[in-house]
Amino acid sequence: MRISRILAHTTLALGASLAGLSSAYADLPADPTIGQTTLPFPPSPHRAYIIDVEFDSFVTGRVTVVDPEAKRMLGMVPTGFAAPSTLSRDQHTLYSADLFYSRGTRGDRTDVLTAWDTSTLSPKWEVKIPSKRSESLTQRYGLNTSSDDRFVYVYNFTPSTSVTVVNTTDKSVVGEIAIPGCVLNYPVGARAFASLCGDGSLQLVKLDDAGKEISRSKTKFFDPNAEKLVERATNIGDTYYFVTTTGTVRPVDFSGAEPKVLPSWSLTTEDEKKAGWAPGGWQLIAAAPKLNRMYVLMHDANEAMKWEDPSPFVWVYDLKTMKKIGTLESKTPIWSLNATSDDKPLLLGANIEGGLEVFDLDAGKYTGTMEKIAKTATQILTH
Image (cartoon, rainbow, N blue to C red; front, side, top):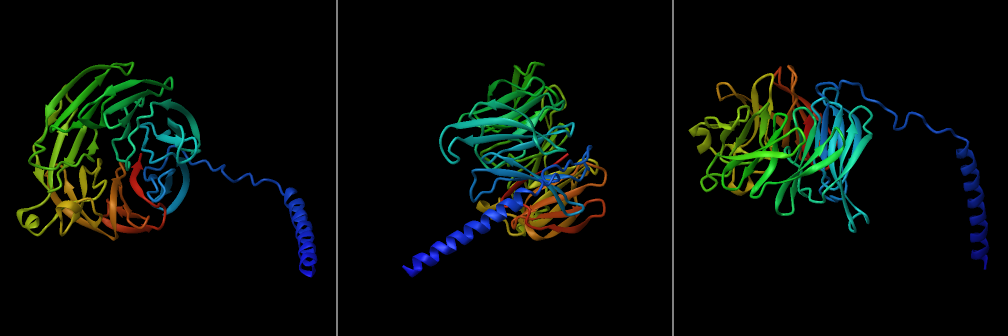
């Protein structure tokens, strides 16, 4: 009985206290600064967007926006399940191909392409797309735009493969283009995209101004029975650079009427190859267009089944001479790379501890780490 009376008095006292607190806080005005930050436009050429699929939960992801030069976080965009993202060429828009379930982890599936304002980091519009978008760790050519930003290409995998074409002018789905036996979409100019095919060819699909297919062709590219080509390429304009898991660079130029396969070259000398050096990582290569250089994550003891492992070593190549001209090293192993496109570029690497490694490429030096900005960073986007 005594305990009951004590509990009753305590409950009444607590209720009175909470009522008082509620009344006091109800009188406080809303903070007008929360959620109201607007980032400057045009964005700094060093602004970066870190795609975080959060592998431990995978239901929702995010894109974290950072200033790597100042080592400062600028904002965050919430995205759907393992959502691939890309930036528009005019720098105004971040696109994400979002996937949601009506019960969070189950239920009816809804896929949308969301257009986010890169200054306010708020959604501008969305359009429902077919529920076929590839569910995988995101990579650079799973979502992309045409060079004039009129179309967004969404890669689908069900496991049959196709590309959904979205018109950003009238915010509508133009249609779906089947690419059987091929993967991803590498944008080519304003009205075409390429895909990499299992038989070792490159398929080029050309579109009209309405986004409909008008032709397609195939070009022999490599021998899939002789080497393992990594589909996660890098590009400067319409020239794409692919690498094999053993270190052969295979470039292709899409600027002409048909693809032109360029001469291949090696990332390593014979002595380096014998010592075990080979490329590895997730987004393992990046290019700085103004410097005409390529950056490659390299392993010093490469193993055939572990080539996707991270590495602290980055080798630097001159794309004109096709020679190694330097090396960079981070304190923590890196999984994915990207470089900014300005004339004083930064190289950015997502490390295995959720941080961002930063290199000044003009000075050729490591400048430090942004700690704990992601959980599972698969890609880095820059304007």
